[in-house]
Structure formats: C-alpha cells, structure tokens
Amino acid sequence: MFIKGGYDLKRCVEALEDYMRASGMNSDHRVEGDVHIFLIQHELGLKWSVFTEQLLTQVFHSFLPDKELRFQTTETIVILSVSLGFDFNEHDIIIEIQFIL
Image (cartoon, rainbow, N blue to C red; front, side):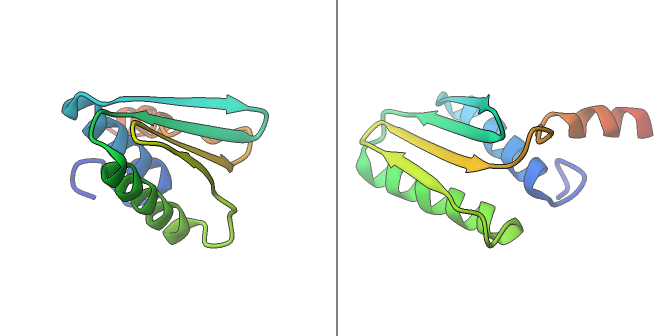
C-alpha cells in the first residue's frame, strides 16, 4: 500500500511486475480481446512456478473471487489467462497519481 498508494488489483499487478523486473525475471502482459495474459519467465524451476501460480491465484481471488483463472505452468514459465475486460490497465494508476500530485 505504501509503495503504490493503495491496495487494489491494478496496484498489486504493477508491484509484482516491478518485483520481477528488479529480480531479473521476464514478464509480459498481453491483451487479446477482453482476456489478459500475464506471462512470467524465470530460471528457478518447477517449485518457483508452482509458488508463482499460487501467489497469482491468491492475489486475483482476493479482488475477483469468482473469476476463472487459467494457468499454463512449466519449469520456467507461468502463464495466467483471465478475462478482465477491455479497459483493465495496471499502468493507468501512475497517471492518476501524477495528476493528484
């Protein structure tokens, strides 16, 4: 909450992206229609992939408990597909904060 100025799904996703970038992991957020695809690539093995899948499940279900999450998980990649609509963008939070300041 302190780093991003609040606690919601967009801020959590953005904080996770920041953490992955600082840790040297590759991540990508793609949008296909209303489906958002979050791709995380790492070199930490299957246990880390399972941990990442569980972390993402907890984060998304804490804000959207009824959303269906679809995962593809391997030793080096975790892919989450979830329908979030056309207007979901975790980076628009920064713009809102900049206007407040």
